[in-house]
Image (cartoon, rainbow, N blue to C red; front, side):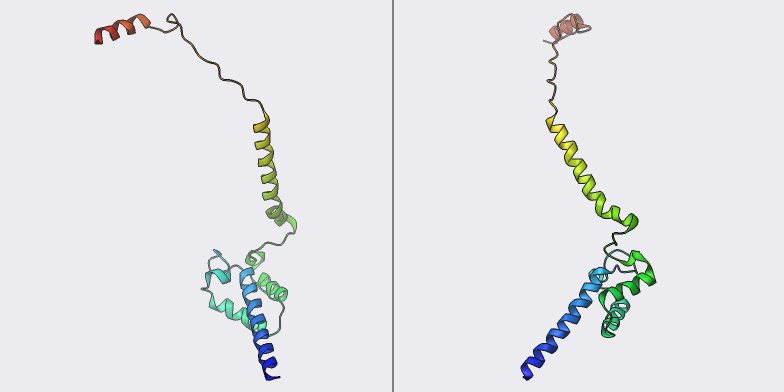
Length: 138
């Protein structure tokens, strides 16, 4: 029975650690906005605050809402698909489909054969002078 209690305790601690890691991956680091709290790992105050909120029994959504209230939606690593933010999700798909369409049309259109250009001696200006100078060089 003690073994089951110990396994349950470790499972609970692992679940808390996993939740903290998930939240840290979901929030941008407000010190430089260059990466998530998990990636940059140089924002110990925010990490401690996340751990305290988890220990208070707050859910992931409650913690995310708390930080959105402090910093705005910019704090979220993945934007919410509402309003103008929908373009973040839709634009890459539209651009990809447009690129595939343009490539398909380009490959399907017949290419014109290049015209071969032939010159007759009378078409070349100063042909007589060029020929004379070439003979002098020999």
